[in-house]
Length: 165
Image (cartoon, helix red, strand yellow):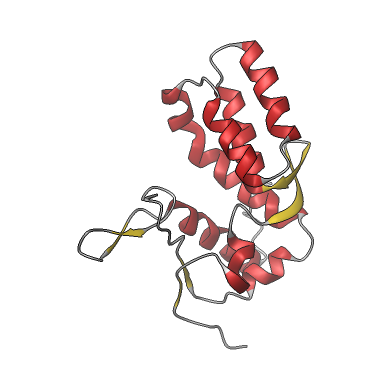
């Protein structure tokens, strides 16, 4: 078997399945979601400042029809930013794993990206989860989502017993 090498520098077209906006039924923490973006917005409700916001906001996010609507609702939640910042990467790892564990066929598609670097390239300025071009047209950013996806691919590629559950 030969692996593809190089870089997938955006999650569009044939690589859209890597995007959190990709619609594929998935289950995380016993709850059904239509996308990883919806699950991630829902996770914000765990850091809500008060119980009513947690319950009401979470239900609105669950009722969202699109990933974009879920994201917008998540942004409206009054959350503890410090608590969210301390947990968001952990939640993203769990959600990405749940996506590839429960959405039919996606784990194989992820493995088939071979040894390519996965970069969540974007033009909306997200340098935490992805990378974007700066004023000198250089790619900058942490690419945290890309790193999480490559970790997930490694676990599936090796049938690693150390995969998260």
